[in-house]
Length: 455
Ligand SMILES: *Cc1c(COP(=O)(O)O)cnc(C)c1O
Image 1 (tube, rainbow, N blue to C red):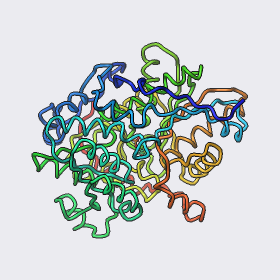
Image 2: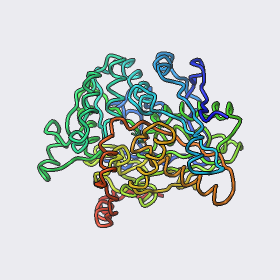
Image 3: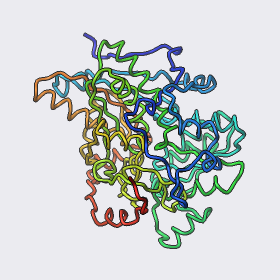
Image 4: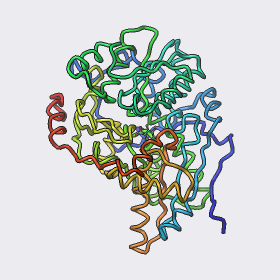
């Protein structure tokens, strides 16, 4: 039998609707609160930051949301993305498990992020927005939004976490090629940035700081809206195209996952891949184990607190109930830049709290080892973030071997690592280390949690 096994859908099978798991929840999400009044916020509070169409999706309880035809048309540039059976990896692990991976690295930006950036750019352009401001960690989100902005005629300003701005010049070049302006954060351009620099001129930045800068610019300019690449409900909804396609492709394979795995930074690729499967389970369908994986150096789901917190460092955002390490937490400079956020999507947090999903944390050296094994067997170099999903899948496959059980494992390979080769270079040179988990830093950041009485 051939070792190359992939499941491809024709172009006209790009989904026509996104899936919204809010329709299938056993209990609704906790409300988002106004930072000043502590009261639930309404659409008007969000209007300075987001177009109405996205605000509507943010609070929607509709199960299916129609994908506008211009968005589907851009999706067709790379969607439906392929689903592969990882036969060569299975053989190397000598496991009875059947490992499948959905590959999102085929998009123009090399990750799943254009699934939402294209939709966000479309709705903003339709409502007359001229400019989008955003933050980026490792640069994947900035390049995805820059690409989408160029397709829909929007200016894009990207506040890029300074440590990545310096470590990843090619990501910056990619954003600039798509026509975006890229600024190292903390910057002198905003009040939030200037405050941080006054306290710590050497600050290497964090996603929380960069979000403050981007939100501030949008709040102060009528023609500018803010765009977020993860965490929010509307982002998770857009990413559902991953799992909706995977459902069809698993059917083509004549199989169904016993376990579904995704890495989680803000939670969007994880949710995008697994929620359509979880939704089926919630509606009385097939059972499935779902695992969100994260770095041990930024263990939001496994060691964070479920509480109301701010999304950013300067406390400009509304309060959302989520697993958090505290909005002032600045994680160590691990290479999985996309997994360094202090918070987690409220929807993913809620499902963990309800016991409907599991979470696991891994050290970066173990993840790179799994990533290298994946590259040498499957021929794709995973993004450092994606190696956290690969590692969990390898562990589950080895467990199958021990137990002599052949389970089907689906993992979302959220992106390729072609812009992250310095991380692999450091791994091979032996200069990468497992960051010791800094309990003192975490405790300090937790002290800053806002005192909201959560019922
Ligand atoms: C941004 C990114 C992530 C983390 O973001 P999520 O919202 O948790 O998906 C993971 N993998 C890749 C390749 C990314 O670019």
